[in-house]
Length: 222
Image (cartoon, rainbow, N blue to C red; front, side):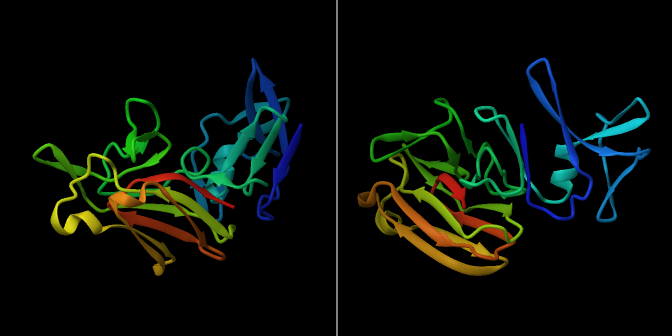
């Protein structure tokens, strides 16, 4: 099994324990019960002592350092930090903050959204309210901690088939991308566009924000 670690601050090396088909990662730490990462004490109730050694979970330490952890069962590899083919912003690296977006996750057939007649269930959507038989989508905001580790953001978006599109609303749907509080791009979509895919340069961005009144489909960073 390989362990990929891209953060030099994780100076305690790693051993992986396989138990009943589940993968449990532990950082080896001699005689340490309390875990302090960059001055912050983190909770790790799974920590235990065995044969004079203390074991704490990789995930607890890595996430305290702002590093996602991903297990790839196909090649028996635990990734800490960057993954060679990028990170999925739905499953691998989730938003640390969400505004105006209750029940926002599109993740199954019962919580999907239709654009140009095709259903999508991997991404996010904002809150909404009904106007007659149609839906008015509000501005949702999603924030991720990229830590300056990625170069490109790719996502798709479009106007949902049930969206309110009368008058000025027909062409006013939009999505914006900010990096560290600065605008990177604003993208306007209309019902005639269908699903559109965008690639955005996020080189050096630590805090990524995607906002707007259209869904965010298949967001990914590389």
